[in-house]
Image 1 (tube, helix red, strand yellow):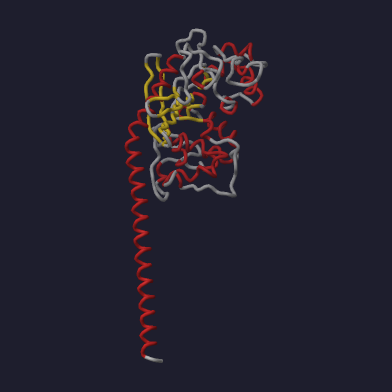
Image 2: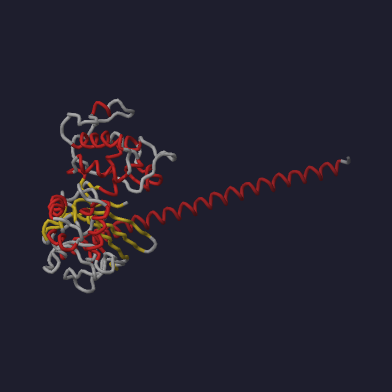
Length: 362
């Protein structure tokens, strides 16, 4: 090969290498520029979110205060001495509660955004902190727990809640939990949150969550998540979380409790619980509208519910009321494409005294 040809090939090789280097530099600069643009977008979004945070919080707090006003007003209507599913606070269409006609709980516009409010009374469930062995046993029966396990779980729940270290029949105290990995002690006090039950001996995610166990059992890491959901395990139509609450009056509201919760009452069967639900729902059998017939007092049960005898009315009076006092408030606050969900727990002592017990965002 001639010298001129060698030089030509060498020059072509050098140009090829130079081209590759240029391409590498261009690609590197493009990646850096893209990363810079993405970083700027993220920083801009974070700055926008940070600026919107206080406004979202105020929308959330405004929604809670609106809920306080609404549940306060529901006590001031002398024609409705009860709390029921047909009233405005519950999303019903049959109760006036003496509220101004322009009051709304949906898409309330304020400032740069809006909020929507959902109110749920806690007295529609039974307070587990006052449940006795009979109530707990009935709850586990409704869940579908095997009869051989009921005594162990019932005793363990009572041992977890009571203030002493004396073991109930079938139950366990701190000496049992201290041998676990990781170890912990029995609370020996009232439950503050229902999820604490996942730490109690014998309670599985299936028993706690019921049909939602598969999707919810991952939500609690650590000791509360130590019993993993078993895909091949038992499945239940109802869970303890559907029946109980930790913050409510000792007596549940007969106008808002569903049939499963009513069946926690000793002596209450499915037919009688359904009869109560049908009686309060009115002629159309659909709850939450104008023809509902909520119980104004427990004495009305005798005449309103077929087959209701005086002894059962007395039993209901031990466990039920027609009023609610504790409400969960869920507020969805929106500013543009930003949205945040807030949760509050409020307690109505008197119309002039509605306290905020908890407030947080999810």
